[in-house]
Length: 206
Image (cartoon, rainbow, N blue to C red; front, side):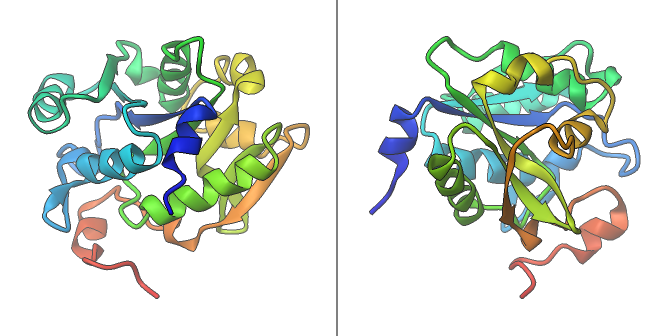
């Protein structure tokens, strides 16, 4: 039985950070194809199952092109364009959280370039957070914590002060932040270079 209804009643929203310019790849990584769909679509579809109708995509670089994709294939998805995207992922995270409605109690933070992170991964994260709703729930891989992660509202003011591309990681790894770790080896692989695209498989490695 799906738990999506409970996720909605818990006030959980998904925030997908897709504002980067993919400088190392020389093309928008959000438009790399995985299993016959764009990586951004893969992230949105996974998030929609977990938090239906409560998904926000933060755009920045390539906003026009990605906006057309969203309008065509994901018309019910909320979007926001972060004009300060050059300041790094911390800026986009802050922008996304600032757009959350009053009814939102927590934000599930995702990126669009972790192709092996899917609905099962996100559900494990949500289930852990539901057991400890006052804690951050974060993926655990490479002997550390990172995204995807769920930030309860009480941590938002601190998260809004983040800057640069390492801000979110520093926040999650701060010893004063209570974090529930969720083993997620599938989150190790992300897309940054052409070699990563070439190594992308249709199914996650076992």
